[in-house]
Length: 181
Image 1 (tube, rainbow, N blue to C red):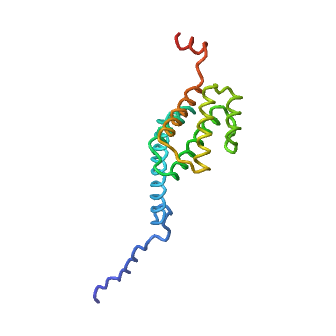
Image 2 (cartoon, rainbow, N blue to C red; image 1 turned 180 degrees about the vertical axis):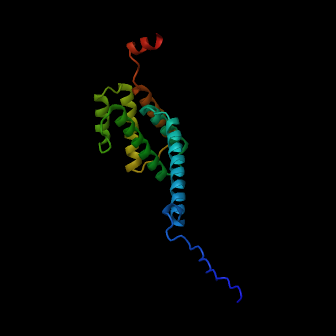
Image 3 (cartoon, one colour; image 1 turned 135 degrees about the vertical axis):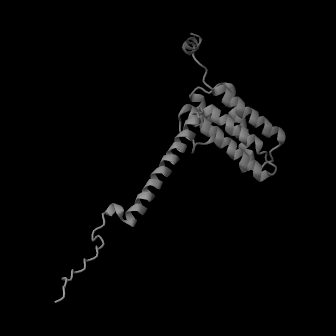
């Protein structure tokens, strides 16, 4: 008899894992990456927003009006239609200024109502005269298609600046004392 050795059965291979935890799946890794990118983009956007808005100081009504007048002065009208647009913008600018300065809604008001409202809120007489001259000339140019002469345009711009300058509130005596102390 020969020595027979019993046969050893072969070991079974190790099978794959039947359950993969969700944090190890491909779709989780993709979603996680997208969320991280979104949060980074949001943080950069918020930082840029706050940096840009912090740098811009709030302008007063007269500072805004002076800036708008400066931009309007650079767009000198060459034709009658351009002059109509120019004077429409000028009168709109003055209405906006008086509205912001005195806190009254004037967008739909007539020119006479605008002057009356401004005078009733303390607009100096010289400023109201300048405003009246601008508005009377603007009516002819906007509606009667009159020609705007260079001298009239420069005079009206000067009157608009004068109107704004005269209506800027002057610091009171108590404010002056606080500044000097």
